[in-house]
Image (cartoon, rainbow, N blue to C red; front, top):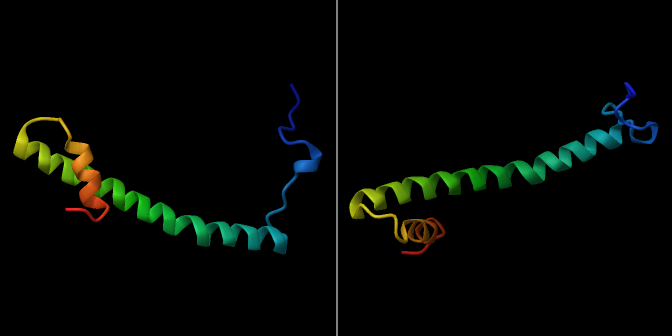
Length: 73
């Protein structure tokens, strides 16, 4: 097996201005989405746990939690 994992055409130099701008673009577009998604998952987990404690059943708990975390009643 070859020691070089990447072919020569895929050598990436992160010190080039183009690569830095692309990485910054990825950070600016993906980090806010990841934070929002993590907050939604935490909300769904907490609401479904509270609902399960009230009803002591798993039926429809996640559906209600997703609805509530997405702005529904």
